[in-house]
Image 1 (tube, rainbow, N blue to C red):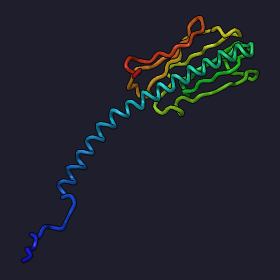
Image 2 (image 1 turned 180 degrees about the horizontal axis):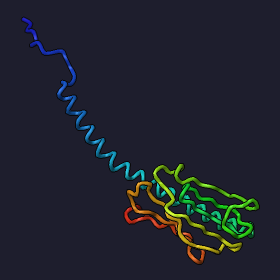
Image 3 (image 1 turned 120 degrees about the horizontal axis):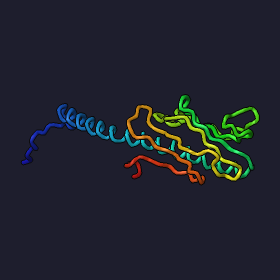
Image 4 (image 1 turned 180 degrees about the vertical axis):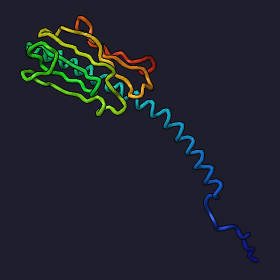
Length: 167
């Protein structure tokens, strides 16, 4: 005689309680992950902005040598822009006779990043700085330390990032 198997429930899947527990755990993990990840993204944007500013300064230095004329790089904190131009009259101001090489709007290109103070740097026709200094870049909400791009008196361009950014 054939014995019938016990009737088992044919329903498969998760119960509502199991589903709620899984969704709650996923929400907690996503929340924790996003907090750490968003800080990393902000630092990466600031690092990218600092490297772009350093690249622009190096380009200005090379253009000054190549064109045998002064080249200025001016940072404006009010508009978060940096302009590099061939400075024909050595006044570090973009005029009618000057040639704009590049203009970067740091605030638009790197969300959450801004120029912290006005700066004006100029390279002479031999690539040596006629005026040197620092361009400060940082967070719009001051949630981290500012980074600096510095031009030394001998023309060395150095990117200075806060401790803990290089990983």
